[in-house]
Structures are given as C-alpha cells and as structure tokens.
Amino acid sequence: MARILMVASEGLPYIKSGGLADVIGSLPKELVKKGYEVRVVMPLYAPIARKFHDGFQLEAQYTVSISYHEVPVNIWSQMQGDVKFYFVEHKGYFERDNLYGYMDDGERFAYFQKAVIEMLNQLNYFPEIMHSHDWHTGMIPVMCKEGHSFDERYRNIKHVYTIHNLAYQGNFGAEMLDSCLGLDYRIFDNGNVRYDGGISFMKSGILYADKVTTVSPSYSQEILTPQYGEHMEMVLEMRRYDLWGITNGIDIESWNPKTDPEIPYHFNKVNVKKQKAANKMALQQEMGLQVNPDVMLVGVVSRLTWQKGFYLLMEKLHELCQMPIQLCVLGSGEERIEQEMAQLENGNKGKIVFYKGYNDSLAHRIYAASDLFLMPSLFEPCGISQLISMRYGTLPLVRETGGLRDTVNPYNEFEKSGNGFSFANYNSDELIGVLWNAIHVYYDCPQDWKMLVRNAMNTDVSWEASANTYCQLYAQLHP
Image (cartoon, rainbow, N blue to C red; front, side, top):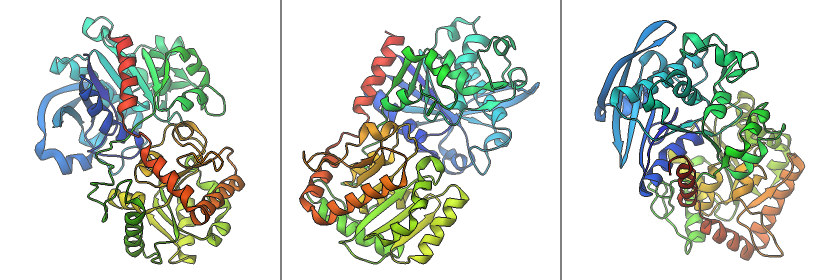
C-alpha cells in the first residue's frame, strides 16, 4: 500500500478553526486501518506549542529562501496512534493570536509549503502520494512539478488536492512567485497560476494536482456553476473528469453518546428519549434557560457568518421569539450577527441563550441535549455538524445545498421516512415554514418524531464508506 503525506493548515487533536481540522483528525486514522502508511504535516501554532511541545521530537533543522533571505526551519514530530504528525516551526510566522487573516498570509504559507517540500529531502522520506488540503497548500503540486522536476524522487510523487471551501482561494500578488516561492514567471505568463492579475494558490492546486477532490458529491457539481463556482468554475471545468466528490465522515469514537465524557447522561438508540431529556435539563440549568424537559430545544453550533445562513435567521427574529421553542447558540463570527444574538438573548432571558466564542466541551452538551439542530447554510461544501447531530439523535434542519443535501433526507409524513428536515430555496419564509413543520411534528406527532430520531441515529456518519472511496482514488494513482 502507498505511503501518503497529508499537508494541511490545521488538524485535530492539535488545533481547529473549521471542518478541515476534523478531517485531518479522523481520515488518516481510517486510512491506516485500510493498510496505508499515513503521515501529516502542519504549522506549529502557539497553542500547539504550549500544550504539546514537551512530547515532541526534533526531526530536522534547515533553511529555506523567503524574500531572498535564508529563513530557518525546525521540524518536530509526534505520534498520534499509528499516524505520525510533523510540525513546521517558525515563531514569527505561526505563533500568533489567530491561524489566518494576516497581511502576510501569502508569505507565511509560502514558507510552510517550501519547508514541507524540503522536509522530504531532509528526512529522506518521499511518499507515493501527497494529499494537500485547501488554499494553504495549493502550490505544493506546482513546486514539485515545476521547481523539482529534475529530481526523480519528487517527479514520482502523485498529487491529490482537496477543496474544503472554494470561497477561500489564497490570491496574492504575482511578485510572490519569485520572491517567496522560487518559481519561474513563465507559469504566470502562460496562465497556469495567473488569476485576476495575481496568482492563486487554489487555482494552482486545481490545475497541477493529478486528482482534485471536494467534500461532497453535490458540492462537486455545484462548483462547476457560476452560482457556486466563486469565479473558479471554468478552471474546475478543465478538471471535471479528475474531480471527485467524497463526503466527509466524523470520528465516531470521539462523537459517541454512549461514552462521551463531556455529557452528563449517556444514551443509545433505546433510551435516547429519557436521557436526552435529562441532558436537556442539565444544559438548561447550565445556560440559564427555563428548565423544562418537554419544550423543543433548538441548538446551533457554528461560525456566525453569512455563509452559514444567519442573515435568513435575522430576518425572522421576531417570529422566532414567538415560537414554542428554546434556542441555544454557540459560536462567533461577524460582529453584526454576534450583536443581534446578544440582543436576542437580552430580550428573551430563559428562552434564548447565546454563548460567544467556541467551547468544545459545551458543543458536545448542546448536540446531546437539543431536539433540533439548525443549519440553514447559503452553501455548505460538506458540513460536519449535521453528521454529529444525527449521531446524538438530534434532528438537523438544513438548506438543501452541498453536503447537507447529500446527508439529510427530509421528513416525509406520508412515507414515514427521513432523518431530518430541509428546505430548498435561500428564503427566510421557507426556513420559518419548515421550522414550524418540525415544531408540529415534535409536539403533535410523537411517533413520527421517534421514527426520525431512530433513523438519524441509524445513519452511517463514519469514515468507513468515504475512506473506501479515497482508497479507490489512491489506487488509480498508485496501482
């Protein structure tokens, strides 16, 4: 079986800002079970250094050229089960308050990718497949194929590039090609990496990788259209026949209502009703909601951004307050949405609560206690939250887009089928309509609700099927 090196900007159990980290935390473990040797490399951020550094091993020290200066690199490593994690250390670039969002992000991640490419040489470790994730790693296939084409060890590597969110593309000025990436302007002039007058890490990854994947079958089709293509649809169209949509799974050991150490009352398919009520009352008490096991509790664990559909919600806040529900929101994001949520809580104490920020432990308790999980996204490449919520017998209410369409089957009252609720158009009236329908089923059709919860908990949200698809993909590159 092939050796695989995953290159990513974040990953559990070390650090997380979005769904990418969940994938890096769980997919490698699943691939190891299938017989692959998998390693992961990521930047060494300050929180990782503080928490884990004592268990790290120094693997290599060398320099790479950035802005015509030789910049030092330290490579550290640690085993997580059967997966070896490498960390690229540079205090100036990575030990900051946030992971992304800096003026020099292009330079930071050019340094990271250069360090990874040279790491292979320093460790004399050359994988058969390099699997790069999102814009932060898009230049890896380019640098191997254009910058190291004279070296057979690099030439033999096959490249898989995964798009987790096409909206974030890593677009920078063309001068970076020479100063930070050490690449010839020829590939700018011929259009290979050129985008909107500068260069695009995302476009480069799409064009230079041997296979391109994204994180659900529906999203892989949506991104070929102007509506979802983020001005990359023509680039993706060129790779249509190498584009795979593979749905994410979740780590079902970490997310397990039978054993989850973060929740007060454990449960399974048999005792879900009784124990969910107990978890609900515990959360209501913890968060200052009115304690009532019978009221429908609606949970939200999300980044509070336009992409996640919160503008729809904000159009209907008055109606939301009139509904016979409680709402528990955990997340942070756009200031405007945060302010609306804080005001909503202030005007509806005991009925609506907003926790600003991210708290992993609290997230577990919200998934376990809620009856309904709200996810009205404008677009959603895959989505992890709806998979977790189903694992905990919490019914997702989603918009039919991307991975949400692929994983949530809407309630059908005639066929008595489904594992959640969904609406088609990005429209606040539709959202409120389906929310009222869910409320009706919860209060007036308890047998149907029970059936939906059972179906949700029976949904396979593990990596098993998806990992098998990745194996088919890798086998095409390395038979």
